[in-house]
Image (tube, rainbow, N blue to C red; front, side):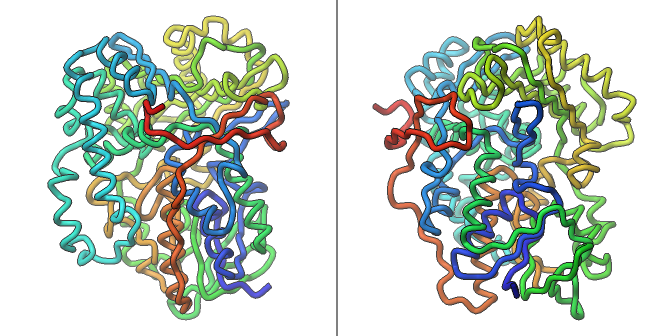
Length: 535
């Protein structure tokens, strides 16, 4: 098949681009180094257990729903999912527990236990962030090709609203005086791999999105979303090449015209790179062809944190443990400095645990469950030698599970275990420095200062994923695919490059047959997604 577009990498951004471009009639070839689709949003399956490798929170489904709708599909039918309530449980090292719920009355009551005045500000926080998202959404859905785009009048008018001089934590002080409650509405900066004390205040919209649009669990995990996207894309004619790493881009002069793998050369007028940006530049493109993003410049950029992962197959169940539980270190600021500045391993790390079995029985053998354990840590750095320090840090994490989460018998119940460190993310997943959330999202690495969707250094190359605009996180990565696909179609001379917005209400899915295997057809009951706390 002579392709119109070659996509390098089958992560969520590459899959979304494949759907959009194939839906417009383009002949798409997708080349993926691993044996399955999804990249970091794929599954690890072993001994009857199924784990998401990466994201486990499915947020703001609207973007992907619109992508599915543009090709005549329905996300909530194709990938059944459940809106969680509570969304997650927060365990504060400084004392206290908070079950975050989208029911506004219940949430206010829960906040009032910490501080009544702060609880009274909760709805104002939601209202003001609702307005912020509404005003800023067109910016997040548009490309930024130059400084002129940044200095445009519409964006300049938004500066007082987004308060670029403030951090997420600093902005939240306008609503919440209790530092624990500020953490409850700012830990989401970790979705971007950043500290809430350094992350730009725009991103208070992340916690707002959870309450406004829900935290969902797709049955089978977030990897089930990627699996379905690949299945639909293949049905649209996308040609998939698995277990075929791209070795280099092909050029005619300075223009990219295709890719080379061990099995051959594939040519197309457009190449979309969905692989990790910095790593793909290093490996696939000669340094001389990318002056704005040379190896020297890449090395000087700021990168996100990484993660230490434990995927545990457990005999029995922990039904008292919430679907999502997050322990926030007693000295969270010190924990973040260990990660971002000192680049050492903390003695009291923050830990996130997903216990998806309380919602989805299909992820483990009968009578067993899965625990997904994530600990934010530094990206690859000379201060940490993972082969030597892994066992000792595992003991620290297991002790946190015992003492902070109450899982006192956990070691005796582990029947399967897999660990990933930043070194694994770097070497096995080809992520630059193992920085799992890509380039950091500071003001010097956003909008036109981030690698652009139509890659400025190399004609014929387009970018999707967390390394380009708008940034990291599944909804934003899907949006990057939509922005890039529009630019690419324009450059191919297409007149209709629009992807219609969703007109009907978002839907969520309830399922009374949780124990069915994740890939089987389910009996669905759909209801409009109400405003949080609505009836």
